[in-house]
Length: 109
Image 1 (spheres, rainbow, N blue to C red):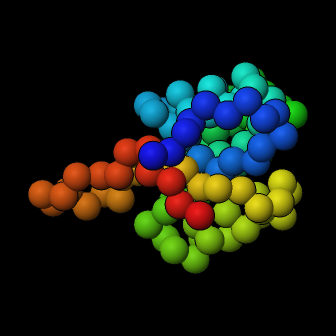
Image 2 (cartoon, rainbow, N blue to C red):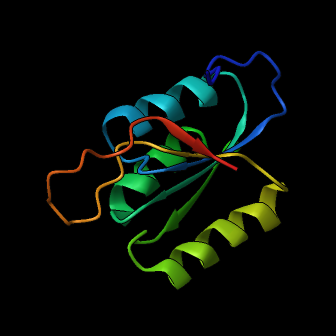
Image 3 (cartoon, rainbow, N blue to C red):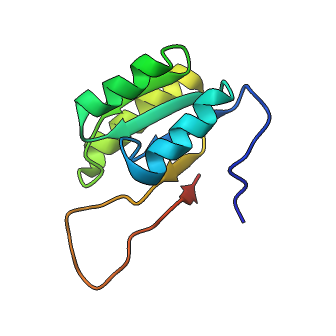
């Protein structure tokens, strides 16, 4: 089970899908605890609004995770800024609507 409540204030985190829903809630939760957070999403204006709320804690990168190369570059730029960080995907939608359910709050390393 993943523990989403960390007390250590120097933790680095990357949240994919941070502009709304669970991703945004995760961002706000970690930002209030002074963690360094890389936020990735498709909607630049929403990422920028979040980054402006916590300018010291957040690094915003626009990327569409369905484009593997660009999403990899986005994550690498966050790793360069903050060092290694676990990656959390939050209800990441790929635009493909089949009978499969999206991952919610799933952690990647």
